[in-house]
Figure 1 (cartoon, rainbow over the protein chains, first blue to last red):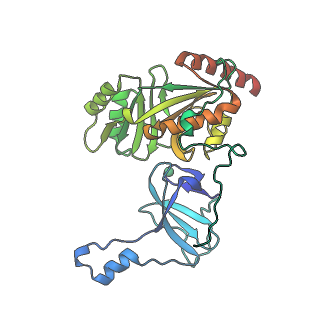
Figure 2 (figure 1 turned 135 degrees about the vertical axis):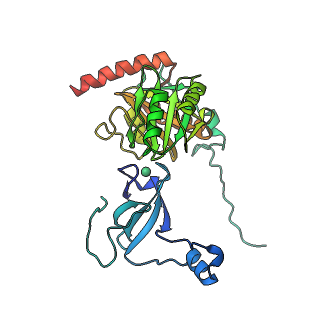
Figure 3 (figure 1 turned 90 degrees about the vertical axis):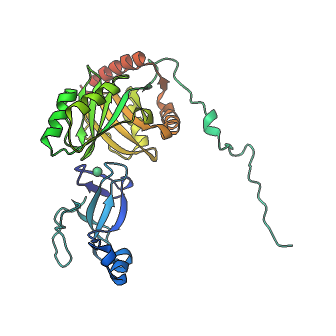
Length: 103
Length: 232
Ligand SMILES: [Zn+2]
């Protein structure tokens, strides 16, 4: 089982308490009625699905019931950091930092 | 005609068969007295449960809650704001949500006091009918909890005065430690019969007794003394 740090509870919790919610940092078109079909389709359906570092949205379902972001390596499953919605990741692709690594 | 394989699905005797309603007929062996039990279960029914929502960064909100209830609003996960003498507690549930528990019959007055002190964007909901509180006491409660939740209930990680929400028996519960050997579970109404059956079943091996309030309190005092002696 993974131990995941919830930035709201400020504590490591069991994976069983969480639900993954897919890719993070997806911006909704500001004016949906003005968006082209392609823009709207990209927003709704197209995801990066990278091999390696991935910024994801997670939900602390059995705990505080808040959403937060996690940077996870999709190859090793290692969670390198978690951070609140509205914040930027400190670990990004092409950078070798292991700051804030999960246990 | 096509080939088929027919199986005897009721092994009659070789394996115990259970009807889908087996749970309603389950009988857990209970200890004859609270003294013989290592786990005591006592429901504290009809307490006032209120959910409070608001902005923790707003000083007026924090001060209003404190004026209304005479207790500080806890600003982080874990430590309960607890006044045992008055039977009032506030628990952090999420960054903008708290669970307030008051003695039976005081929920209306508590809500009115909050509404009298708070202004702006906040919410108070009386959820007393939707959940109940079980008090678990005795020297084996920690072992019982270890069978029920993935949350670490070791004293190093779960000191007296801490409260969390976690997975409990594949459902969820609020778990609070209010004394050395005294714990509280806040469980939802729709899961109450399932969780109660689960807890009784899980506690059977330790010796379990379903107690009235006073029996549970005196047993908790004995258990706390016992644990203190062991620690020495
Ligand atoms: Zn959380």
